[in-house]
Length: 141
Image (cartoon, rainbow, N blue to C red; front, side, top):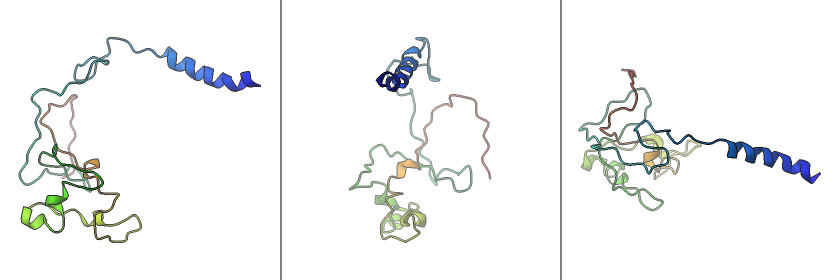
């Protein structure tokens, strides 16, 4: 009985041990698979005055400025210094969308919903890196 119960574990272990990765595999950027990843050369965050045009309806807006030094944790959200209801006019920044103040039941909250609190889950800064593969995507205008 014990031998039958151990058989599936032995099969799974054999599958993992038999999948070897060839040493000559490289990433699209040319780095060896086992080497430490390096930051691509000459890549900077794209600062776009007036924002970045959206590619499709309901796309989360891209961040048109650097955010590396912003802290977003349970006690602090650096994005809200400029984009909150209280400060967006003074900072001349877009206000956080009204949907960010609703909970999953549609109830309007006084503060940003915990579902929308970590801005960089959906909103990302854009880099000046060359594309890794050819891309002919044309967004909806």
